[in-house]
Image (cartoon, rainbow, N blue to C red; front, side, top):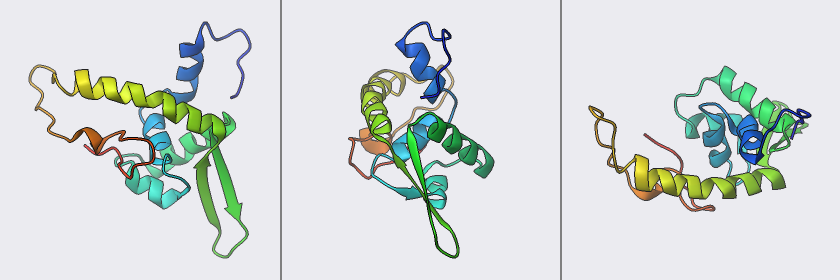
Length: 134
């Protein structure tokens, strides 16, 4: 992880530096089943723009969470996968997902439509083929 000497006050602060933002957690989860190409990630994270996806992947790579491999082919083939630190981070996100299913999804905000999604629709068990979908 890119260090900010003296800037973190606790582990949560350090983790939020890495996963902060709307899309990073969803990108990480899209990589939980293994190696993905850019286009696959774009499809698995609906709503993210190419520019934001590229930027977040670069940041996650700089933080040691994602590995980017460029294959010497024509046309070039680039693949993304989780590093051991990324795998550990994804495992840490599973309880957060469970909390979201149990609390936030169960009680929609006043005036918001109820979300009727199966528990596996977002952040299913590690190793499952589920991806976040609205």
